[in-house]
Length: 83
Image (cartoon, rainbow, N blue to C red):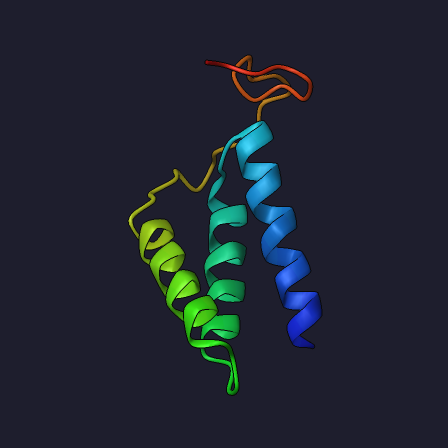
């Protein structure tokens, strides 16, 4: 898979997790894509460092294997902001 497609998958999975909650399978997929992108040769060092930091945070996430996304999360509903 190309670097661009992996980055698109990372963005999509992060967005989906923010809007509907993290699940076991989304978290596993996100970790795999983050690992792959962070291990890419020729990456900007700042991007590589950021990806490794983000991966570290997602490595600490533990979701139950039977977790499911929610249809509504009041703090992450599109169009709403919390201050």
